[in-house]
Length: 288
Ligand code: GDP
Image (cartoon, rainbow, N blue to C red; front, side, top):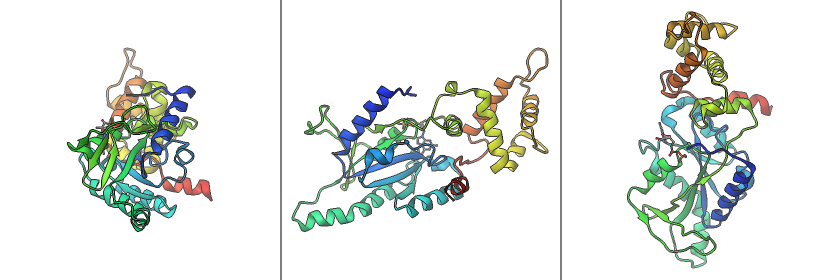
């Protein structure tokens, strides 16, 4: 599912999330571990304000493990607890519950001290499309979907999913829009399948991928396509890949669209290994 976001949709999405925020103790902000910043909603801090949050870097199985550790540290240093998981395989689910409990320990201790009966932690998942919200909900839910009646304040009946005894999760995630303003982010989102290819030019996405791989993972790029050297202009490597893969048109010209499709598919199918597209050093340079 790819949503075309228009101002009206954004306002509605924001309203829905804000409404549901009132029902939960903590937000699970889900991002793609391959792009922990680029796959965030640009207004997330404004929207959730002071609500406690756990950052979940999903699809960690597809991301570069050393860079995932760097990103976890990055968030932790900024006072945001973060964990890396693979929702598809169900890896890291316990970490989520443990972290949520720790984040809310004080609040629940205070409630207990006031004589309020202990209850499960209430939470909801928020993220841009395709980061794996439904997959994570299904993983956490197993078969424990609890039917509840109307919750005051919301028109639609909310269902809570019980995750063990300690956690209750809203069965519908909050869907927010990705960052559109920055071209680079657009390419990264397209490469990881978060937005439709057709929104951007296919060849531009592939050229971005080649440049990125040549900068951060040159050996993998050379190995995958049997390239000896990769220099500038990058289009020469593009040509070589096209020729090697037999992407030729009737006159013998390189079929750039077909070559682009191959490169993009290879990246998505992990044929160049586990990749992380948000590089912490680049952001540090911007900050300093
Ligand atoms: P949503 O739009 O955020 O609800 O995303 P989905 O749950 O529909 O997931 C989008 C795609 O990502 C699906 O093809 C999932 O199978 C895949 N996916 C979700 N989580 C993971 C994960 O942890 N690892 C991998 N490799 N794929 C995942």
